[in-house]
Amino acid sequence: MPLDKMLSANRVQNQVKSTSKKRILETMASLIASSIPSFDADELFQLFINRERLGSTGIGEGIAIPHCRCADAQKPLCAVITLESPIDFEAADDQPVDIIFAMLVPEDADNAHLENLAALAEALQKSDYTQTLRAADSNHSLFEAAVAPFAIEQATRSHA
Image 1: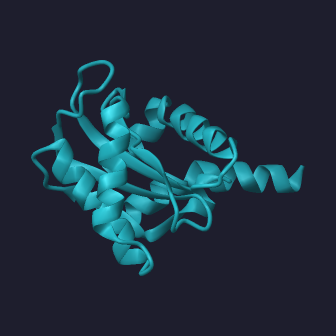
Image 2 (image 1 turned 120 degrees about the vertical axis):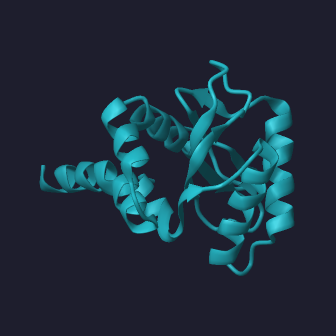
Image 3 (image 1 turned 45 degrees about the vertical axis):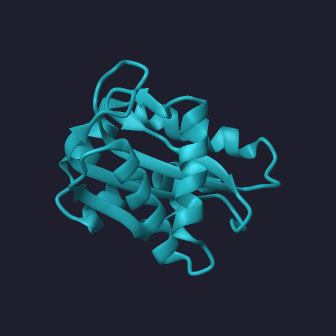
């Protein structure tokens, strides 16, 4: 499932102030729970923390992709936050993080979510994409920047 189908404008926050990995995971859990009433922010936070205990989801270059399986998720979904100031996320390259994409998948999801993670990670490897995300000056422009490459890719496929 492409990112433009998993991300909605109400799960995007630009230039968030945060001081720690724990706080940003709380913020991410609250953002997701506020957009989907059946989700509990405390449960989501615990799921993110449990996943981080297995190893940091900081992939490098200032980017993290916290992800987990969630019983309340009916389909894969994402949220994205950029930070006003980068924070330590125990990333693979020891660089602080300022772009965080969270991904939730249903508990019974097959390995399709790994393809979603791989596609997102691949997009985030492109410096023009991350520069556009970092340059966003509002929640709306961050949402548009986040989904644009995926919407274009989808449109190209449907016309082929």
